[in-house]
Image (cartoon, rainbow, N blue to C red; front, side):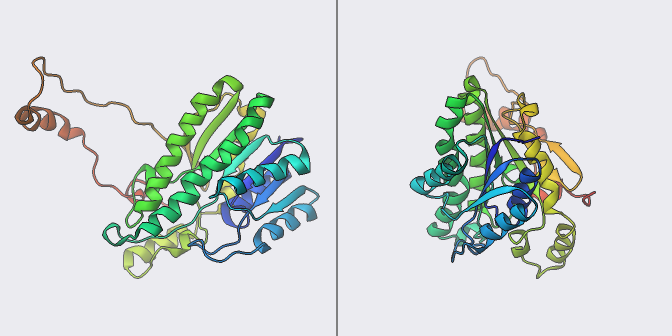
Amino acid sequence: MLEGKVIVVTGAGAGVGKEIALEAARQGARVVVNDLGVNIDGSGGSAGPAQQAVDEIRAAGGEAVASTDSVAEWKSAQRIVGMALDMYGRIDGLVNNAGNLRDIIFHKMPEEDFDAVVAVHLKGSFNMARAAAPHFKTEESGAYVHMTSTSGLIGNFGQANYCSAKMGVVGLSKAIALDMERFNVRSNCIAPFAFTRMVNTIPTDTPEGLARMKVNQRLEAAKIAPFTCALLTDAAKGVTGQIFGVRNNEIYLFSQPRPIRTAHRGEGWTVEACLEVAIPMMQPSFYPLDKSRDVFSWDPV
């Protein structure tokens, strides 16, 4: 289904990204496997994970090349896309999957932890998408798949940096879909549910945390790959500007914010009227302070 296409996958040295890279290669794509080989918090670095994924692809008869440039920097993102062009002469798809975590409760979160997570997830997605955009425009085709998270879409504890970045990715994807539609370029988001080394950092020092981890361990990273690759195919050319979720054998389409209640006052609003009329009118439709696990309360199937 991806025969002849060149796909760039970031954060592809392990977990979800690696499985997407492997599946893309199985579908006939030539793959640029990008991964810094860093720790969860972004420290360190090694060429090993990216090269290992490339070796697996080649051993199975596929074509791939390893990249260890950072998505968080403009120039290095340009080099990642440049590698696809230098090695294979084109780029047809980009999966923005690279990520990091620095979880801490909001009132204790230092600036550098916020900036570091936004730099990879949001700025990194922009850098990579922007680097690919002129080539997609020239070819008048191309597909972006960006990884968001229910931590942003719904909410999660101790992840103000991650939640902010992942909701930012949703806005970025929609803006790309609107701006690039005239060039037949599409952009979509996936919120993946998978047990990876990032998920493995969630504390298990409470009964609730331990129970949640047991559920998470049943979420297979490989299950994310087929739908991701489907969105990169020509057969999905009519799919753009959407937010999906994949959780084992379930695929979701998420809603997007639209007005659900309206309060009108012909003479205009005062502070008192807002408090006495508008808020009480809307309060029955308020959303509770749900976390992702409150909404996805059933076991993965």
